[in-house]
Length: 260
Ligand code: DAK
Image: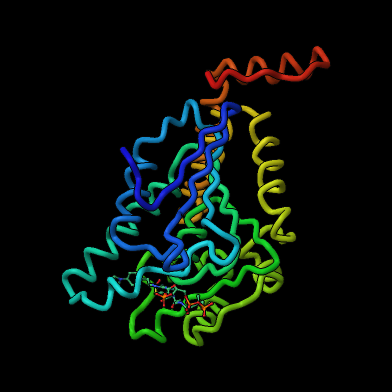
């Protein structure tokens, strides 16, 4: 499928970059962008792509939110449908069996912050700004921001960010744990790539199991979360990757994982 608002780059080492590109509106998410993201993620071959990087086109914005010029025309039913469109696409990102890293380059507001939070972790450029400005527009966060922001930074900080609608700078986002690292804008992609390459050196199936355990255990009681991990651990012993990883250690060589 040809995308109007997405640029996709498949690197032969297993890293794919998905860039949201709507420069006239600072990469704002209209319903076409959301459908394209959904289509892209739904059809991603996660045997070939082992790490997905999501970023925004240009230096000014990652994504400056849901498209206000489209939302202004919505009523309750369409508002609900628009919200579901983003929520479903972002949930697909969150549950992909591969790591997804957000490279946040500039404004990361509203639906943009929600897109970044659906990724496994975030690196930001020093010019990035994060916020959930929705209540200033008379709406609530609509793409699972109330849920994921509170999970990431705690309820008190999430409530302050959402109730005040004030954007925070990259260093504050780092302090509260919304991003894992901050660097100069020109270094951002290199830094993300270096981390992606480190991930590529490890066993894909073990990473997929670990991601699922981390995602799912959050909403479970301790006993169920521990059992989930026990089962995942056991499943790893049915893989060639476990045999290879342990043999390589004992033979004092680098492991070569086939994802089987
Ligand atoms: N939507 C549409 N256009 C946008 C936009 C957005 N979110 N953000 C920026 N633009 C457009 C501007 O209108 C402007 O267009 P032209 O005037 O050139 O045609 C162009 O991008 C450049 O923006 P500025 O001229 O404003 O640039 P500045 O550097 O002066 O300011 C800014 C940058 C990011 C501070 C400012 O553009 C801004 O405040 N943008 C809006 C940020 C915002 O409020 N974002 C959150 C959107 S609300 C839900 C579903 C989803 C959501 C909620 C509920 N349900 C259905 C329940 C999600 C909501 C949101 O994300």
